[in-house]
Amino acid sequence: MDLQAAFQGRTDSFIYSIGPRATFADDNFMQPFFGITADQSLTSGLSPYRPNGGLVSAGLGGTLIRPVGSRSSITVFAGTDYLGVEAGRSPLIRERGERFQASIGIGYGYRFKL
View 1 (cartoon, rainbow, N blue to C red):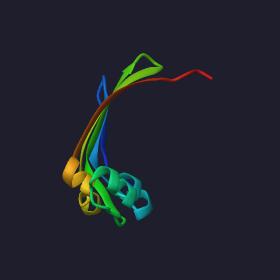
View 2 (spheres, rainbow, N blue to C red):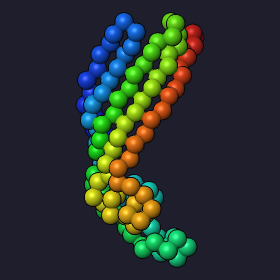
View 3 (cartoon, one colour):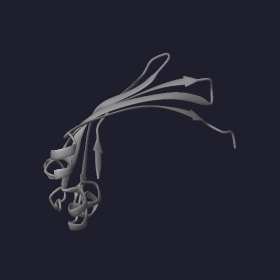
């Protein structure tokens, strides 16, 4: 489950949104991303781990949209997240990753006339 609150606005040239976010999940969701099976442990050298459900991550995200004409736009987004306790306890994160996660991206959208 994703929770998000955002402050949104518009200027003459841009549409923007910024706010906090959090993701919660059960153990079935967490296992493929943060868990380590016995077989994976043998091949990776990491300790087996079965995460419980709970907070996956919490952070802050923002989006900036620049319309380009009447049918297209360019979108830039960025975010920072900190992994929750169960995800952060994973040997994959402790030994080979970071609890602090950052993302940035850019996209182009075109609206077709139907």
